[in-house]
Length: 377
Image (tube, rainbow, N blue to C red; front, side):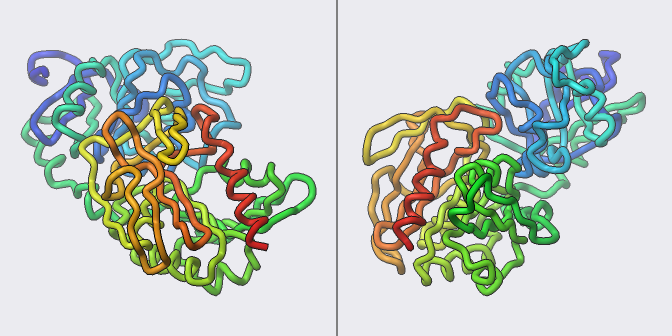
């Protein structure tokens, strides 16, 4: 923690608990507010920045060196950068990669993302692990103003609890990702903040994916004659998504095979009668272990979530749609990481099997979805 008035550096991260981390401007110059969170991935910063699930969050990279491979035109997970701000320790001065088109700092400037570099991100991460994710602001420029002024702005910002954000990131119009090769199945994917690699992973398995806006009705889903329904990842508090929950219940009523990930896991859980809660600091990174309670198998997964389903790993309960199993958990803290309906064809996980970026341990979940759709026929 430092005193802004005593050190001549032109950027700062200000936390709502009064901690100030001083650094240098990185990316666009200005001010931005959001929830500060840390991501433990050693790589994949481009996918992280363009993941809609990070909407209205200031991301701290725990890996010290960021930007080494620059920025390319292939790895974006959506049409823009979604983070509210960016905090790094040691940004690359010269990117080096055969696919790189420009530097990370250039892209941050072009898209107006305010960042701060030179921060002791190790100290910052330890602080967030102890105190939890919280509101914060990234400020940069020649005239930052006083600490109290910046702190007032941070403390007046809305919290993530109760934030209805999926509508900000969903597609405005439906679109189709064609199957690679022969079309074997058709899937209606509800876009809560979907990443580009998800429909690509399904397309590679012969699935034609119809990506539909959050406002879609059950009739809109049925109109594409789906063999299955997919609930995507996304940002915000799942308790705000009454429409998505009711839509999911409509799918369960019709016994259409359903698969959800991340935010979609929370939506399915709520549709089955479980509440969700705000986690202390969440799970964000590409190295997080998950255990399947039925097999004991461990998968190293990519995750980004600050909310989770209530319950105990391996717990069974009765829902309006029959028995349900809380099927996966994180051994680091016991967080529920999956849910499986035992009497209707529906399952979901809290992590990202599309692995962009991340390990590939969970990719077979798409194959399980294919099997479920085959059996549904």
